[in-house]
Length: 217
Image 1 (cartoon, one colour):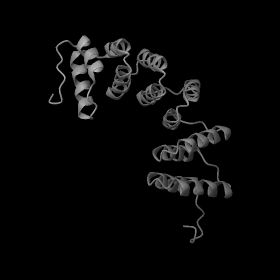
Image 2: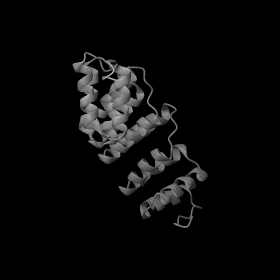
Image 3: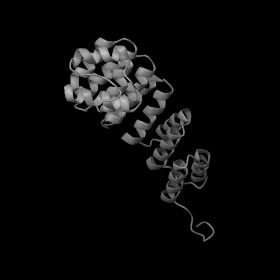
Image 4: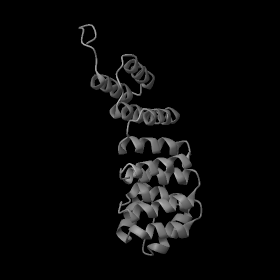
């Protein structure tokens, strides 16, 4: 394209960045970003979304948050997909204070968090052993009318049970799931190789007395 005398534009370079990020060639993607600025082309929301998602998929969490900060400094408003990627990156780094700031930024900009947002947040709080915050976020999610999925419940319920917080796990579980759905969740846990331990089985037994947990179910 360049050899034919046709200068690349932002759309073209965004496509190149997206392709490189998909292949996890993040160093080359960042080189293309530098090329854009050298040519006087302003990166846009698509540019940064591709890069941030790419860094997250490559487990380059610090680079993802650095790009997010640069995006903000340049006055480019992020979308929900971008912010979800940033939240996931911050949670992986256990930067729980920063992740709540991003959540606040999301709501201030009129962007509605979704189930992906809260799954990352709840995972992050459980990973950082901040059980009270994890439960608060779960309650907030339900109050906002965002339906938890099995990923949400598996992360929160299994983590709480593992820590012996069976009463809290019971309340969270009871808030959204009935008997049939409880059976489905447990079976999914087992299929994923997450065999409930004795504490988990006890909590489930209290909620669903008829439930029999075994790998064969």
